[in-house]
Length: 151
Image 1 (tube, helix red, strand yellow):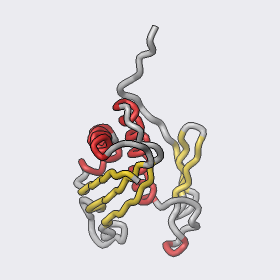
Image 2 (cartoon, one colour):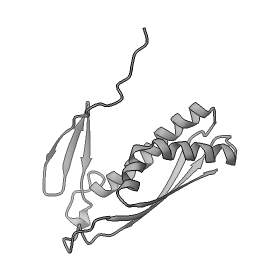
Image 3 (tube, helix red, strand yellow):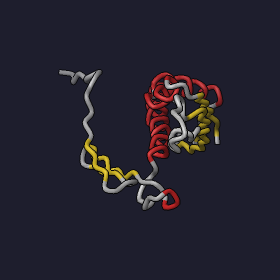
């Protein structure tokens, strides 16, 4: 009998703030520390909340990219990422509410595999369809540009 995967599920997390800048998110048997850098009053024990959100896009692009490549039979090998984010900080500085704080994200993905430019383009198109973190940013109004190239 085949196992049927759930299409909708509830994911549960717990967390606690251990100082004015440091928090812990508990997921499964893991703890993710989120903290501010020392120059912003933190202890630099983890990524800042915004950096955590940005790194989630890299992680999601990696996972979904590899799933799509496997489904398409394309060798993308290991991936390298470079990202730039245009961040309107007026909100976190408590100057005024900002509806779209991350104005633009430019993510460059470099494939170390043997995929051709055409194959990489197909993987990129499929990844854009299915990466939930990319969808989150795009649907919030962030101008998201993801480019794939061979390295």
